[in-house]
Image 1 (cartoon, rainbow, N blue to C red):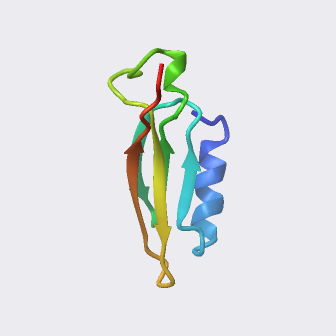
Image 2: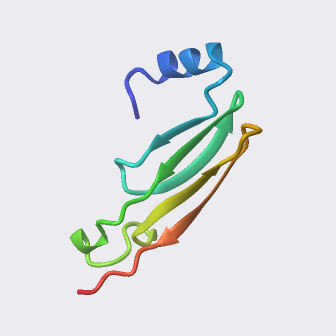
Length: 83
């Protein structure tokens, strides 16, 4: 969704120390690994805006663990809000 997506991909590919690219603006969840970079779109906790799920995704936030060997683990934690 970035107009400069190809430039970002090329920049990340040139710098092998880039392991992760985070986004979340579209409030959905997605994960893909491409050319050694993990791309994560991490949902949103502002679920109260739409009163519950947004396109089948519950309000959630990402928990991301970074390890010394360069690996990354993540999971989505649903956010329980009170109306």
